[in-house]
Length: 173
Image (cartoon, rainbow, N blue to C red):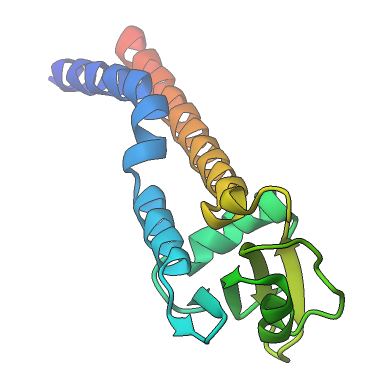
């Protein structure tokens, strides 16, 4: 009586195991929230005369996903309240982000930094030679994709173990 049901479940699991590694990184809840967080970072929410800044803060949709990707992309393991993307001339960025050092560079540039609860800032990404890569958040996007792939691999492994367990039961009976 249970054998046909278990066989159908095994077939569905087989399809799921085949599709999960390709579908999960692009269509998961994690990926959608991560994209929402990226959009918040790239949307200017604070505009000064020389600086545009987008941020995402703790509690907003996408913050935990951005924070997790920041661990891989930037090595950010500290507890932070906000993550910022600031765009403008380097002297204005230094003033806005309360950075201690002169950033150097010329023309508009971007800085990604994190802000702790005590208002201390942690520089995550500043490369004067490649400002567009900073503005597009390429490192952060790569970190998000790696996290999504890792989660997809875990899902695939769990489905494979479940499939093997069901197959043992089907064969045993």
